[in-house]
Length: 344
Ligand SMILES: *[C@@H]1O[C@H](CO)[C@@H](O)[C@H](O)[C@H]1NC(C)=O
Ligand SMILES: *[C@@H]1O[C@H](CO)[C@@H](O)[C@H](O)[C@H]1NC(C)=O
Ligand SMILES: *[C@@H]1O[C@H](CO)[C@@H](O)[C@H](O)[C@H]1NC(C)=O
Image 1 (cartoon, protein in one colour):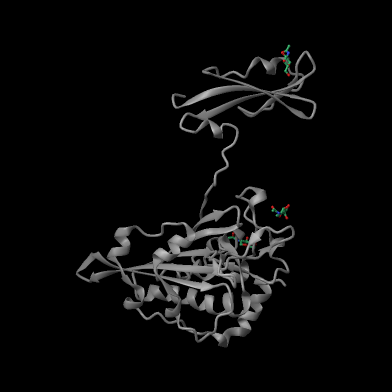
Image 2 (cartoon, helix red, strand yellow):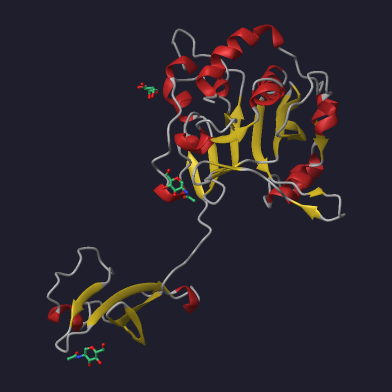
């Protein structure tokens, strides 16, 4: 182990009071310290776990054998708080999860004309066969729970829409993991304008070769009566667990060959849209939500595209019409979906 040092530390405690003395020596020994051998309590099985026991004078001794990467500051010897960015790689998307907010920090997708349609001759994914589920790959204290959304008044809003994952039932099921979900206003947002925007993103696959989409929950400050800027947001669950974003961003990048004779020379287009997590009128123009990609990056603390990509790309609204299709006619179907997505 050339890049790390083995640290033997004995932490002594008397009764319930943590003793002041912590003895630590750095050595290259790999065997647990001798404390273990005098211990009446069998040492725990996992390597490096503390060995707890009473020594001959009746005081509790905890010996720890810790492997600390030499590149880590000593302040992190007993605990490295993170943040841990859980990168969740699924069949139809990748997500970064925010353990504090208990919803994705971002999701990323790659869509093509074939990826958004059901595979020929196969059944593909159907949302009627999917159920919302808690993501057991995340540590339990940081997971969003079904219970947190129950009677919250918010929809379980897909960041990667189920309809973007029709390739298989398994791919679609993965979009129902709560690690792909954030609380969204239902009527007028998740079930309407936000759904129109998702549909517009999918329809880009009709005009472009490849479509890349980032979906980013945001917490934007608002200026209040006293002139100060504050971020206020609800937290749902009892006890409160899952934060309710104030806004959501969709950031798209499309590619298409500049000309059919040069398929390797691609024209890139990018665009970012920021929508409030609130009722949006059907007649609101999509262009009214356009912001610079950098504005989303600054608000989220994320880098979405490199400077090269940003400077080499046209604006998406110059490459295609930035206009949503309003679909109120299938509200009956949305109401049945509401029964699935929005227990109130
Ligand atoms: C037992 O632990 C105490 C510290 O809590 C230490 O001072 C003492 O030397 C230990 N005795 C033996 C025999 O290891
Ligand atoms: C999809 O999810 C449903 C509901 O949880 C489950 O019954 C089904 O087995 C899953 N299908 C696949 C292919 O994972
Ligand atoms: C979150 O939910 C879990 C399970 O319902 C609960 O035990 C926990 O106390 C909740 N709150 C926080 C802040 O983790």
